Amino acid sequence: MLIRQLIITVLVALPLAVGQVSDQAAGEDDFPALQLLPPGSVVEEISLPRYENHRVTALITAKRLKITSRHEAEMFGIRSFLYAANGGDTTCVQLDSAQYDFRTKLMHSLTPPVSLLNPRYTVHGTNVVFSNISHCGLVTGPVSTTFRLTPQNKK
Image 1 (spheres, rainbow, N blue to C red):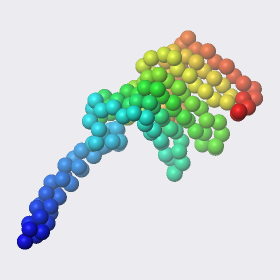
Image 2 (image 1 turned 30 degrees about the horizontal axis):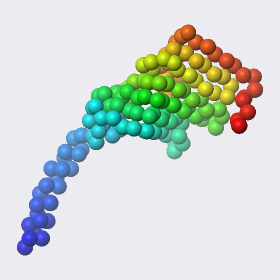
Image 3 (image 1 turned 180 degrees about the vertical axis):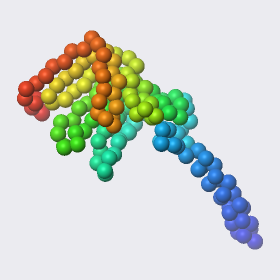
Image 4 (image 1 turned 30 degrees about the vertical axis):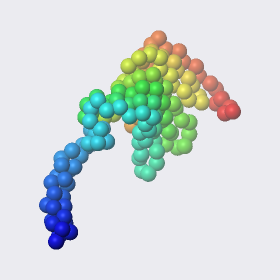
């Protein structure tokens, strides 16, 4: 008899629990885990990969991520890797702090300095705005750029 009451209680509560989870599901422009982590939450040592056609095309790593809203997060100690589609050179964008907007898919640096590291070039600047989707961005200055005719040897 006790088991039957327990089963009935669980079955009655199940639709309510399922409804609560589906109402909180993240939309396309929301932070993917927001239904578990409300604004103000801080996550240490996070990696956010971006996949296209079952292949990693970009990877954002941060020492700390703070969720500021359903659409934005502040990150600290950032390294964003942009992988070439043909398996060529990887570009690494290094930032001390930035804001990422899940609606526009843009990262805006909050504090200088910023660096772009690639075997063919190195860029150091004051601020950057870039997209991991398009692999395009703008570095503002003063900016220092070094081009290499031959890639650096990896040691």
